[in-house]
Length: 266
Image 1: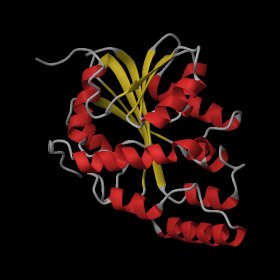
Image 2: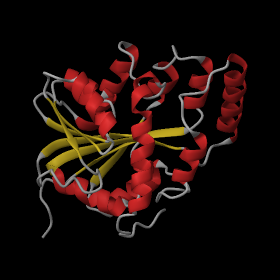
Image 3: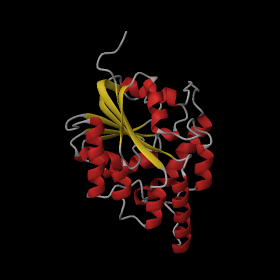
Image 4: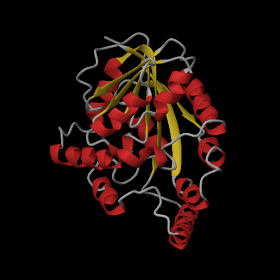
């Protein structure tokens, strides 16, 4: 289990992370594992959201690290009023353009502080592939608890990108061989930069569902549930190139939902 200690803001690392995601914005919607195809894959994501967050029609939902707005697109289709937050401006600009004229608001902000968001203002919060990047999860979890309404739910979708089992390592090796054979370069990730940033974040030794539940509970969240995500990746992404499908399924992915108590203890 990890021990969360308020570490303050690692300004240099945060700026490097911002630059990394800003650079990827132009091709992000083309990346396997980030775009969401209409049909079975989109339906699987929406089923996960219903299971973890309930009926979202008419609800205010915060999409943290929204990127180009693919998760927001799923939430909007479910009738939610969505605020997308990202601190990489090129990502946020694409999300705003994608959802212009819909019930979407984009805020340029640090997800660990959410300075623009008032207390108890959202019915639900969603994050995808964010928690592993946090430099100060203690600040982030306290902030997310703050902006949720009493009884609101938080759903986190993430993965253990560090501790990969024997099968996962074999899948990654095969994916790399296939990528070299057909001239592909995965999803355009700069692996050297990715690994350098990973070495500096809090969860540098890996993140799993049990650790995440433990850490969220320390900040007042309750009723944790773990949700299966196999359908999203094993079945939902079956149309992706084989190398990408193998790479995406080599990691131990998971989803966890928690709830802010309806009545806070004094």
